[in-house]
Image (tube, rainbow, N blue to C red):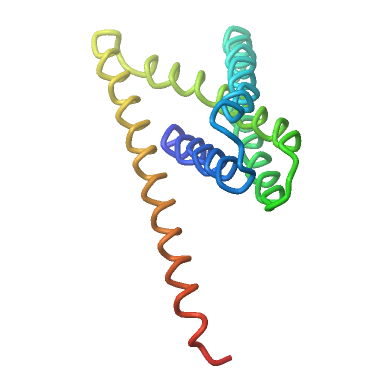
Amino acid sequence: MILFVMYICRFASGITNTYFATELHLDPFYISYINIFNLSGLVIGVIIACCMVLQKKRIQYIWVPGFLMMLLFHVLMYYSFDVQADEFNYYIPLFLQGLGVGLIMVPTIIFIISSVPASIGPSAAAMGLAIRYLGFCASIALINFFLNFMKRAVIIMPFRII
């Protein structure tokens, strides 16, 4: 369930990249440079999570800061979406999202694989990939649902008498 929720939150980066392209009119080349901050946060998050796992820290102490980083990313992005914005304002939120994903991903994968006998370890890894894929599909479904919902609300609202 943790992996599923994380991948629903993770694929908000598609909305962010679409916003960069359509509202800020950034070219794909520059968007890829901005996403280096996300990638660097991911690498640092994985390194921190690996160090914490090697120190035998409880998984909850790694998950909670990871989800808090994801929450902070979503809050910062919610208040940062504007038609006139400076792309430098998005470096920290993108880094925080990568850091959060790195902190969540490592202990979750280790937990999935280590909680089963070694003989069915590959099946547990395949199940983790299936959950990741289902989280991706659910995030796309939620994005499309809310986009269609908002389009419908815009069409209905002009005819409503308040």
